[in-house]
Length: 165
Image (cartoon, rainbow, N blue to C red; front, side):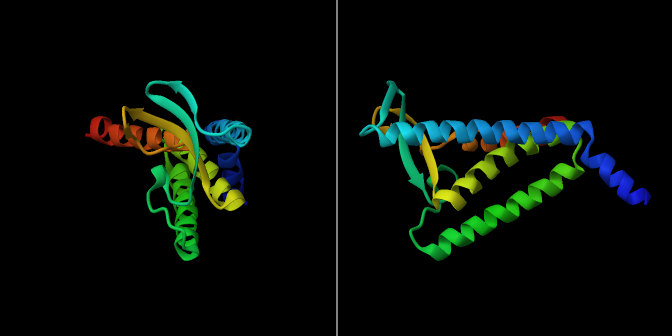
């Protein structure tokens, strides 16, 4: 009886609700911008020029972040999707064990990972659209979910190097 009460209290704690809010904000922001870009690109031809260093250009990515491991073969796609699912499960485990600051960092990563996994399941690819470039050199095309995943990972690394020494 006491174990179930502690579990219920942990699920509805301020920390858990804060984590869920962060995950939902990242997911909703990612979805909204992807839908806007997909609809905009379907109604126009080519990329949207923002400035000399940034275009919005829809690219369907079947790989992982930044277009890495893009394969046309179904087996690679499904194995990559399964791997991403297990990473999400592991991140949930880490989130449950973490302190509040770490929960927020894991929530940033989870919100982005869930957003990209959602796209993989619905579209069988992830819509990437942010194209940074200098002259003819283009960085990997990415999306908002990738930004939050990268931000969360960088902050975890900084925390481990600086705070934990």
